[in-house]
Image (cartoon, rainbow, N blue to C red; front, side, top):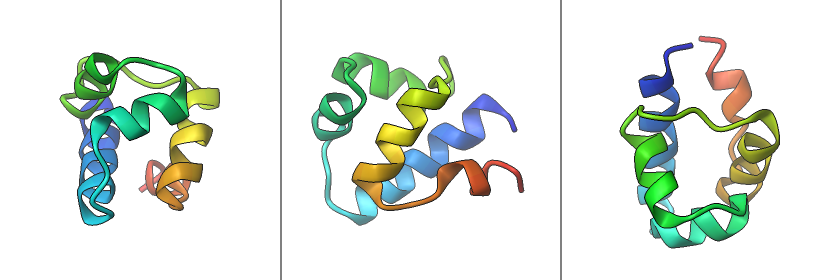
Length: 67
């Protein structure tokens, strides 16, 4: 899956839940700047980070990334 696509999915679900990038950053153990870069498709989260983001968003992102 394209890096940009997973970032767009994360951003969409984060906004739908009314969460800030800072909340996602804390869950993933990263900075808000890192979350912004993920959402913009500049970096890709590791599997561990992706699982942490999935938990806070309550969305199976890895399944969506197979689309």
